Length: 107
Length: 107
DNA sequence: CACTCATATCGACATCTGTCAATATCTAGG
DNA sequence: CCTAGATATTGACAGATGTCGATATGAGTG
Image 1 (cartoon, each protein chain N blue to C red):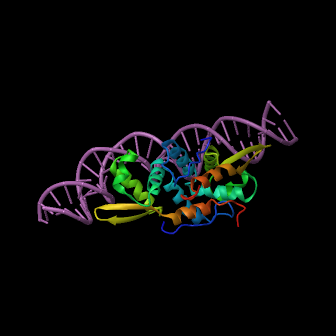
Image 2: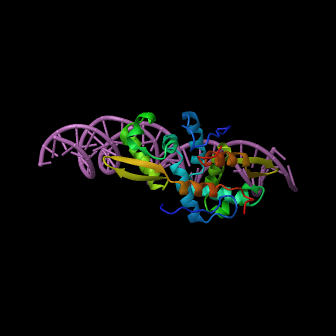
Image 3: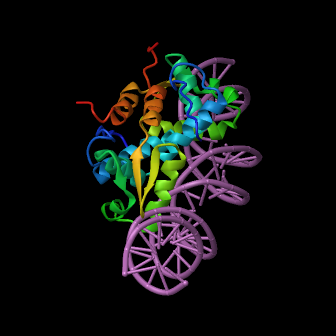
């Protein structure tokens, strides 16, 4: 799911393949823990994974799993810095989501 | 899921309850068949359920199931007219989604 | 009231998902 | 290298989900 479809959901008949891509994106967003991760990460430019386990109140493997889902959905960027891994929200993908939800009347 | 949370996802720490509400909305959008339904319905103001089965290529009970999911997520309005049931996209909920995805820098 | 047709519900099934404990991997420092 | 600490992977399990055939419900028609 590297590339993200941009066909606005509400304007034209969604091609099946675009529907699949877009549904994958929404699926990545369909869990409260993952939404809270995105929120926590976007609070600061960039957040160490080690700072995400405690506020989420979930076990470390579970947090790692959710981060992986978001990363593979192209919603997070990841960078290793020493022993730590820093995550940041991938704005381009969020932008693609906004486009997908853009008003039907829009150009 | 009658009322929809509007807290922008990317600005402040999402309260757990808002995260749950919003995740529910995204979950409703996390299936290609449902996205295609929304697309088909928004093509015209209002669409009869009977016109949705064929283009989707799924069995009638399956389509009915997906319509129910979208309806219960507050993404569709439903109106019985004679023997038929007409669906339309609920713009207010889509708008709430746009708000949830609005840019972090936004007011 | 019976018949027809549109839609919903039910029951069953295979598959997917979130969660955690246990364990592995990887990096830095001694 | 060996240890310590951060992150990922594995395996297991309960619960949710998408799908369909069969059936029920509900509205118009004769």
